[in-house]
Image (cartoon, rainbow, N blue to C red; front, side):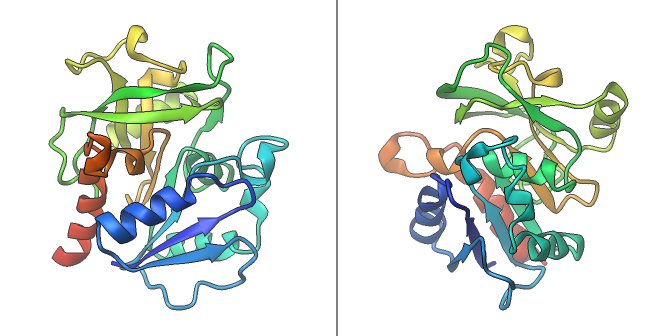
Length: 234
């Protein structure tokens, strides 16, 4: 599996992602500038990553302008054809703005920027991103966002859970899910979801910040290992 990391003006987690994929996971990584008008060299066995940051300064709404960058029409087509697409934090916001994932990311319930470690429970292990993480397991993954409150109507939320599209929920260290373990007010403690075809993934926590042993936390590494293993199995 080859990875492409999209770089928007205002991205600030792109180099973290590139480092982890290239140096920790030992994969080929291609940097993709937002004005690039093609995705030549990628096929549906590869993965495009939309990293965290503040694309286009988060003007209008986070991800709202990035959705219309020249490269995104190719990214959207790539996902529609079955290619793997992973959006982290601002990348998750871009995916929702693009209509590739349902719902929207609103301002944090406390109206503050939150940057800290948080626990998330693996709600579904039946996807390429989570197959190596046992369902119900708890991962310690950092968050850093001001607009991470996931919201969708109840009918949409019900369908996401019924179809196994909810990947992660905020929880405490024992895996208990409740308002006290919800850092931003997200509907039903949702921290990450996928599309119906289970090839487009969005999550607010940053697994790339929990993948290098020098940081003392490698809980996020299992997600990258899962994606790579999917290609090997295919």
